[in-house]
Length: 82
Length: 82
Image (cartoon, rainbow over all chains, first blue to last red; front, side, top):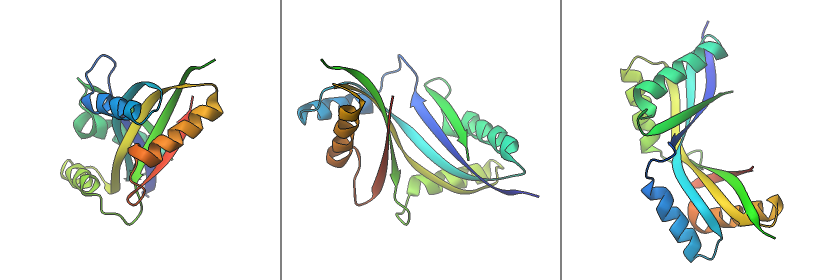
């Protein structure tokens, strides 16, 4: 029997990969008077997965990351279940 | 004395707010054969903040969210320190 499992995926630019959006955020925060020495911007994706259990949900979400949600050359991903 | 404090901000579309990017992700995952009944896409922002301590860092990051990182009409934010 399948049920709905909530999963959260964080997709971040890998270290060393240029992140223009992060640079823009850092710059804008500086102009607003905040003391920030680094900013990186990625995506958070909240999913409701139909799966038999949490293990199956995690396996499915990792496949989703590899196939669609993250670009493995440029981005790393982190999956949290529940 | 100030030191560098790491902070992570999650910015998500509020419930009830249209999220076309999330709808596109849900649709694409369905086409790839995954059973997903919901997808919402937001931003993760990793910051290095110059602050006296973690409390001061949290206060600064919450101000950053209100002033720049999140649109309070459309988005909610969640700050994690450390």
